[in-house]
Image (cartoon, rainbow, N blue to C red; front, top):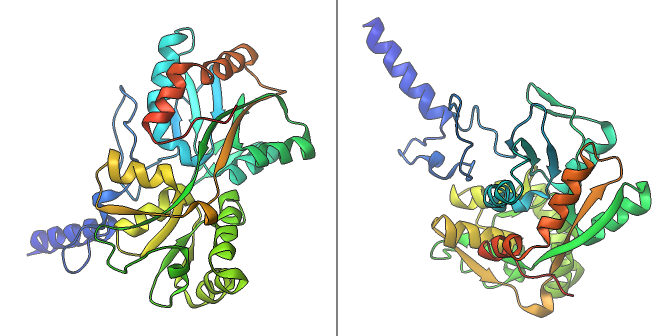
Length: 314
């Protein structure tokens, strides 16, 4: 009897841990990490209890450290494989793909604390939106070389079949539409999305989505925009999520998850340019220069095109 009860409790505990609802639908089906894991070692990942999706590679004595704006997480695996092949002298590489505002705070404070883990590595390369990089350079003078390497417009991610009939940004102000929205505190994209709201429906639409609906809980502000928004749509917790087009493309075309993309017309859209910058105090100066040069190569650019990023303007 005790053994049977213990088994029942174990199954119930696993169901709760993995997000299985009372109806039997597993919300864990789409949980990240969505990248191929590193090879070798003991594989242990138990989403959502023990799963680290935004720390990549070798954390011990790395030869190169790159802080990527988080929405490029899908590119990292292919990019690092190609870079290591082109530069076999660099095999221990550590990459973070957190929101750029969080990465900037990490640089300022000298460390990142994630759960019980503390990381005190300094980056060699920092990437973010072009305006964000320019602002950080103005404030802190952190960077030497800066290179524009990709562009990305916005889109709206919805569940397959578009059950709420979302046609554009204006529909996100509807009371019956639950929105997943990047938090303006650390996501520069939030300001660009809000600019789209104002273009689509004036200050009234922006206020409805970012104030009224935040207060009543129908707009959810993320803490990790590039993973939370698609996941909330996939798990049925949000009806629509304004995201970078590449994030919608990755979910729909690469992972083949049950989502759809609603296009935002050009007159309401914003296209961001991404910049990679070498830190003035980069611990691995040569590696940083080699990586920045690699980002300019047709091989690296082809990887970005594979995941839906657009070429930078000359």
